[in-house]
Length: 306
Image 1 (tube, rainbow, N blue to C red):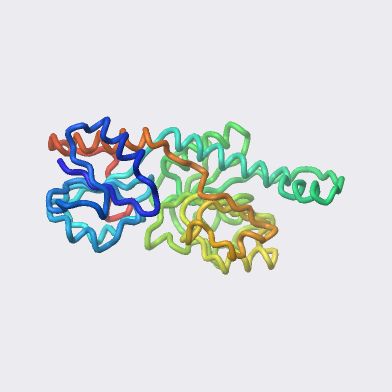
Image 2: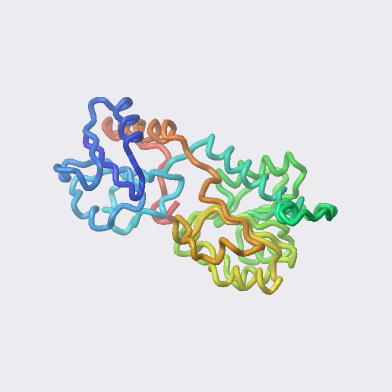
């Protein structure tokens, strides 16, 4: 078995070393320093160069380095190539904690108080009463977040692209259902997978359906948000605020207007970071399953892209 790691803009030494402890008999190479591309059967990828895929004639499986597979152009893979993703319970806990924290920060006006501290202003105000959270996307991460929010007495609704049922959550999957819950969204949390159907979903048309006190929290992918439309909505009091953890370009360029906008909270794609140990173990398990001719874990439906 030959495993190739093709992950852009990251030092992969720790990942290679950890994988080697799990897979002592497997040849592990790093792109582009790989001499025997024709023997590669398994690839771990994140923003891998597109010209690479055609150089792998014996490729059988690809694992995303993260929870999503939008960094991989699935159209460039042969139909029989299995695609998997990382599913990390600890990551789900971190995501739930991040979402709850930033909802409460908005509810309690913490950013306003941080600013007033710098100006030495003593101006106490009551917290916002708003408590209805609407999720765009309601898979494993969204459902895990919902449990944490419900435990903190928040009201939760969710839109997904397929029917879902979840205790104490109003679930919708139609455009009409989405329209109905957007008007009630005190906090809109995006956890959608990035596909051709969900790219640019948070645009002017959607933002104008939110209440004026609404807050957008994006922890999915930067391409879900039309940046100019979000800034327009904030500048024109269409919505109140936004918390953004993901961006179209990362790191976020220093000249980007998000950095200095009073109504935007920026965090550096830190909402949920998987540990190398957990990622390496899942990858190693799938490499061993592939070697035995068995079904791989956490497979992606390539027709849906998630």
